[in-house]
Image (cartoon, rainbow, N blue to C red; front, side):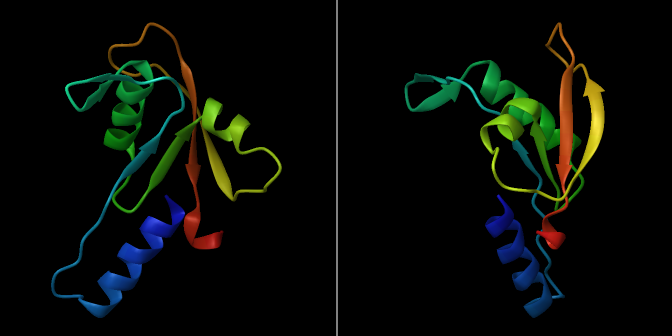
Length: 100
């Protein structure tokens, strides 16, 4: 996700007349594949995080952070949110990828 955002930032510097800004939301879990599409809670949560991200931002949930253990990430804890369609709160983090 960081590499993708850096690539878009480089593109935007080279093409300021047509900038592209991507929002990324990451969650971890077992997706359900059906006719080439992915479904499931992890996919739905990633979509909700993506929708909440700022343009050029990366939002992750606690599960992704836990699986990324061992490396330090510059991030901001945004606290717990209850995404639409979920009945429980999820801790969300904003990766400060420009500092990574």
